[in-house]
Image 1 (cartoon, one colour):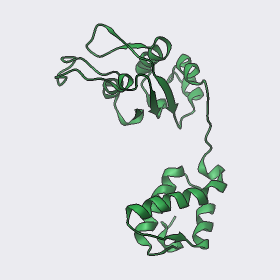
Image 2 (cartoon, rainbow, N blue to C red; image 1 turned 180 degrees about the vertical axis):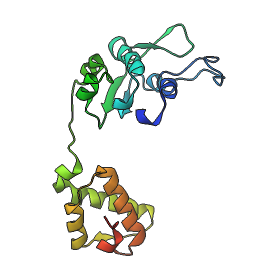
Image 3 (cartoon, rainbow, N blue to C red; image 1 turned 90 degrees about the vertical axis):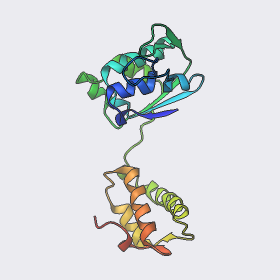
Length: 191
């Protein structure tokens, strides 16, 4: 089960993660399981956890440490056995210093860290990723046998990719829409 923590306000994220009982608030007409409960005996992926409100971080910490939580509007605890995987593009150590992220939660989540450098720091991956996105976009647009010209690949390799892989994906999607058989420099955005 996955959720992007930056896509919700604090209250909405709390409801999505922990669920609620009927009557917990105005529009809570029936009981709702949260994503933590839905992920029981499995994995919950928290994307952009650095955006999570500090109050919710405390509730999440309880889930990790004790395997239980209380739904909104409920009085009893719900037990779960869930593995948490989290991702962020923020510097969590800096967020801890600024009082925006709980240090205890950081260390509970930081069992195994995968540091993924920005795309501009791993130019050797650009060609393979561009081809991957080219293949996906070609299939979506019902275009077969699209390939990249050498000049196009040079431009892709020399670009700074401030938007990382998402930007590369969008550039390739745009190029597929504009191209007929070969992705040429003129199919790429001006920048």
